[in-house]
Image (tube, rainbow, N blue to C red; front, side):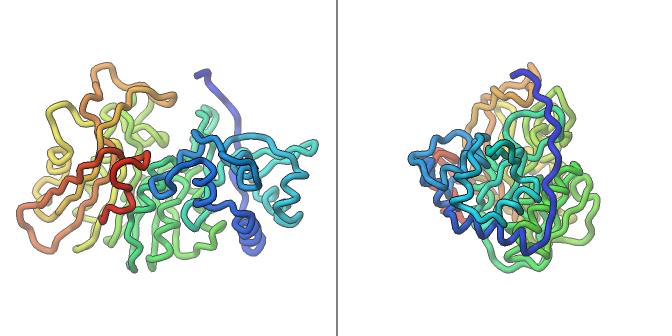
Length: 360
């Protein structure tokens, strides 16, 4: 793919009532997770690859999908039949739509995600900005498997758009999202206000560096691709040369930052070498503290050899790459750690056991 450079500004916060009214307008128009999944013929609980789908029917939901996901221009006269003038003006003031000569475009994706709405950058690789990751299938899987029970403190590492922190805010007294990318913090703060979330804060920093104390839940969807072109964490896809530089640091920090009885749920690529297992890596990273953790692994083989974003080292082969979920639970006392593996035929396409049925 040829390099693409386009300076894209950030979404703008406006009055809380105006933001809420715009979202209510989208929801009233039927722009919901279930409706979008139905138009694209996918299982909403297994994740929605919006950008790969072709809508089955043409209606107002399809029009909003075209505008906010499929990067198509739509006519203002069509939007005026769906949303009020006030709501359209609010979307424009938030920088979520551009209007020119009767046509409307958007520089951003606006995803319905369960009962929330999340703004991200587009999928097309843009070398002019440090892109915010769109809501790929893994975002919906992770959002769908977290048990929404009351918690005191939740930590979302590599927060990106803030999606998992915002989802966690509904059942946590306090949520902290952390990212090393200033653009991510700006998007996360915007998305929190867009959804009327007031108990989540977002901090600029390198993983655990900005926080103190322990957390009942630690969530992460870290950068994970083996990449020789960029440093680990420099963008939303690079996990460094091994692909596991960020992941390993997250797991090494769990003994200090996860509360007793707390859980960490991570969705990631595990680019392990042939002849090894995920358990071997995690046990090594936890060291002597591994005796305090039980683990649940639900992953499948994946061929991760093609990408427009990164270049794998020549010596790394992906015969053994796994992708999926890892849950680690911290015990009060040490014993031989229990490692459970949930075998699945498929994770993302709805075949096999749907991800939302897995109890983590």
